Length: 148
Image 1: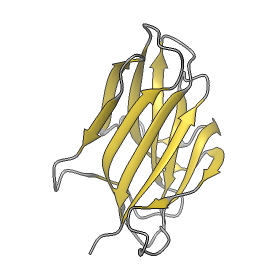
Image 2: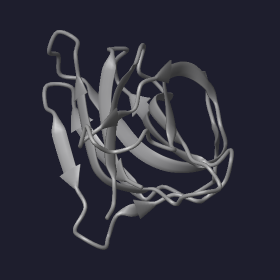
Image 3: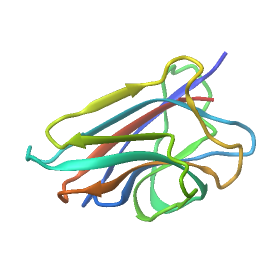
Image 4: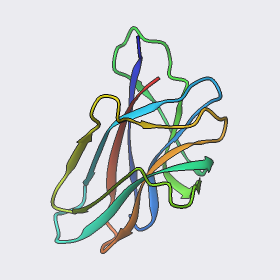
């Protein structure tokens, strides 16, 4: 039976910044099934283009605890980083999820069963949730849920 995990993260000055990065291992191919995005700044009429992109090389960010959906599950094999200062090496054109959203709104995407975003089984591969463009510099929040 699949084990489920989640991580919450943020990006300060949210222009072309990775808020949450997942780094896989050679042992698994994680499946991202839920993405949530929002903004924690004072509401303003600003917009951000969010993207979930696959990468082949990890970036530099703050390590973030991966949480279990079921406390009885083992520790996740995927690791997570938030608020990257050096962006991962994203795969050109590999953007399986993209959404433009106003800062005053939040959004929750759930994959249809069997349509999850699958990440490669590689020691440096993974995926990142990032603001590709933004009309403001607010703090952007993101959450990812996946199964292993």
